[in-house]
Amino acid sequence: MGPVQIKQLLKDAQVGQSVVVKGWVRTKRESKNAIFIAINDGSTIHNIQAVAAPGEIPDDTLRLITTGSCLNVTGQLVESLGSGQAVEVKIESVEVYGTADPDHYPLQPKKHSLEFLREIAHLRPRTNTFGAILRLRHALAFAVHKYYNDNGFFYLHTPIITASDAEGAGEMFRVTTLDLYNPPKNEEGKIDFSEDFFGREANLTVSGQLEGELGALALSKIYTFGPTFRAENSNTTRHLAEFWMIEPEMAFFELEDNMDLAEDFVKYVISYALEHCADDLAFLEKRQAEEEKNKPQTERSMPLLEKLRFVVENPFERLTYTEAIEILLKCKPHKEKKFQYPVEWGIDLQSEHERYLVEKHFKKPVILTNYPREIKAFYMKLDEDGKTVRAMDVLFPGIGEIIGGSQREENYDKLLERVHEVGIEPENLWWYLETRQFGTAPHAGFGLGFERLVLFVSGMGNIRDVIPFPRYPKSAEF
Image 1 (cartoon, one colour):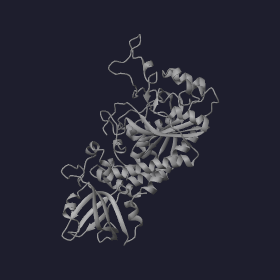
Image 2 (cartoon, rainbow, N blue to C red):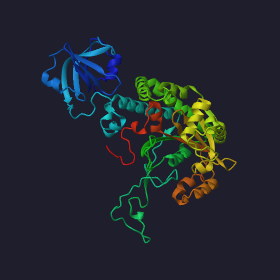
Image 3 (cartoon, one colour):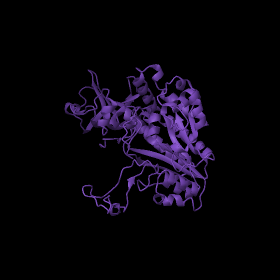
């Protein structure tokens, strides 16, 4: 299965053992008595130090060993005399796989801004920060699949190219094979999509939810985990044009069941990260503290590990949207006009309102339910009052909403009425509506943006830094 990784060497290898280390040079230091080379292969946040006496590495080879170069080192594992590591490699031979000219290699041993690293996203995984984030991202993705598999869910692959708009937002990327310089026109002078590849307008999906519901109404419990796309011209630290969504859908679940699942699920995946990514999380916690040390104490984030345990160890507070509005109307920041956005029944709560409920009022994660129908999607089940729907949002410290979901409307007539209300053509959703005519059943589900989860667990401040190659307005490099 290839060479032994540095992570495994540091964990299991015995002093005196012959080893082969392959990886990239982080630093090289020469003294009168020794040459020290720090090597990392991406398997761990920790480097392994390779050591040679002066003259043991030929000068022609030594000149090629610079930060960023790739090496194959053979040697013996010995006790380290320096601090910070228990063992190191006494070099017997070195092969240089690839050089990195120090005059041109951009990742020299110094601090680089996150903005600069986005410009070299092909190289930033070699930094400590992005190595940690990508290992954490892997662990969280694995935990997602393990959780749902172990709980009897089936992984459903929903379409990436679709003709439906699950949210009714209309901010979608069009997919076409038509000649953009001379597209076919119909009698009204509009583009004739009947001549397009699919014979109709098609787009990149904004959500796999609607198709996920179809799967749940046959397999009972499914989840999707795939890429989704939003053509929003948004340049905030919380939005991407391409991101991954986790969307479970469950037949015979009602709102309470949905909340139970969401709470159990996020606690599980965060606990998994705490257990399996301890070194990377410790590094990211120190990084966050360093980034925020010049901020006033009141503006600093909760320490990363404390924040994660805050979620895992506390039962989530559950209350209705209406109850939340009443709390916000009575709170000190509202009365003293410290909120940037107004508070009144019917508003879509802003992050500042959500964070107040979580961090100041309840001091625990919160699930809000029963939102006004006007600010929620057409597929959510109407409450008996006709004014609210059986929606739920899970709110976390530092980030606000992290999960949005609902019990879905299973009544055909009520769903059709809502489709008309929001201006969707029923014929575009005939297949979705038909499931309410053939063996309809109560069902529910939710969506969790995977990058939003990685952002929360990593403590990073910008969502562009938790996905390998971010897509946002005016940026589609790499």
